[in-house]
Image (cartoon, rainbow, N blue to C red; front, top):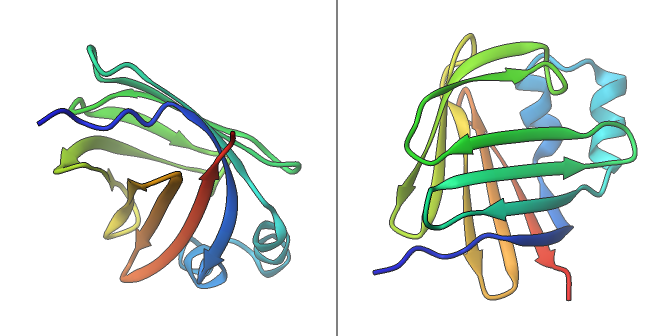
Length: 138
């Protein structure tokens, strides 16, 4: 069975539990409140043949770039998020992309999956789960 192609531009339409997630990452109160007001856009480039993926998360406050190859561990600089680095691996679990981030914070990672024209993102850290839903741009 072929894997889905995540390539596209997606705009956030829903968000849940982001403040608690950011608090678990030790983000200060003022910055958490600002981040919770942002409506990020994700630009994803996905090469199905090589597994190479680029995810650009764009906001009016700060942008975050993540370039990786599915199934290969790499050192991820999370400086723009919380100032940490970690060893990261993104792998397929069925049609979902599952990221494991090994570092200071236990149980850190995320899962992306597609449902129709929506991109779902579930972020995890220390038992806290935040969710975002993005709609693909036409």
